[in-house]
Image (cartoon, rainbow, N blue to C red; front, top):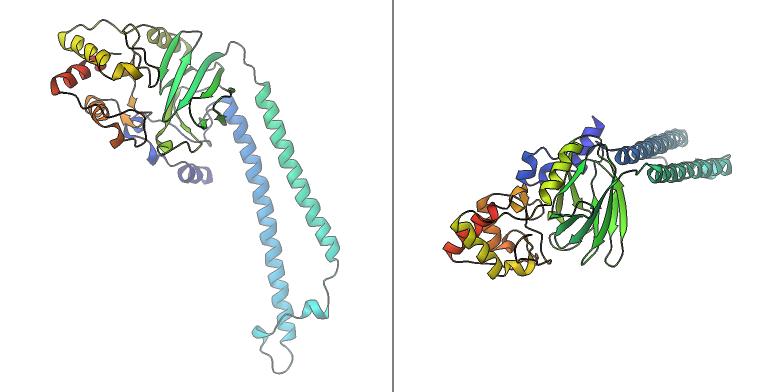
Length: 349
């Protein structure tokens, strides 16, 4: 019950976008779905138990002190002219506390032992995480931008954005970079946090032991829309992951209709191609997310909006309406061009 309350209060799922919520996205450090998160969860349980014991001891000592003060006050109030409840506690002046030095030494020793136990548990957890087997790990390069995620699978030749797919039961080593400011990757169900600092490269290892969709997020304030920088992490069976990478490695198909062909021309001629890439076309911008398989993603704008035609059009027309501070400028287009552009983008599966 206590775990359920903490999970509900500390990590409220109310902040999830409606589209992500519909997919039963999980986000809780108290429900580990991988070996790294389970090891960290054990450290959390130990820390909670130790701190609870210390808190109980302090409350007990306080109650004893209050009881003794009340007892001494009643004894002093026995003198004529003094009400028992209003009598000052002068017992410490008349009869100084005995064995006070011994009590201080005991308190210091217990606090020191508790801190040493926490330190040992923390170091042990770190060593356990470092010793986890990483054989045949999937390699992923993750770059943080304001306010989206660039995802690359270098061995599979796949580039995508705002979605991370991993195979169940297989370790994943994620290389972390930042293009602009400090970000932090945190997937509570699968691993701890790791900073992404401009100019530096770090790594984090994780392994999903249960299939599902886990919500990652930026855990370092990185700008106005820091809270709207989510990353769905989808854990699937190894065979399904192989099919996913194979599909993502393909270039965009040739448009099959006149409207889509016009939409592709609009995309290439307009400002879209300066910032976005669509593999197989002349669009090779790198400032914004790769859109080669945009239509297959469940959400838009880093997990903010369900990926449907209405939201896609609203985002293109005025992205700052949804994410103030985003680098993408408004792109009002004539109705015919907008309709064709949406037809083309919806074909990028």
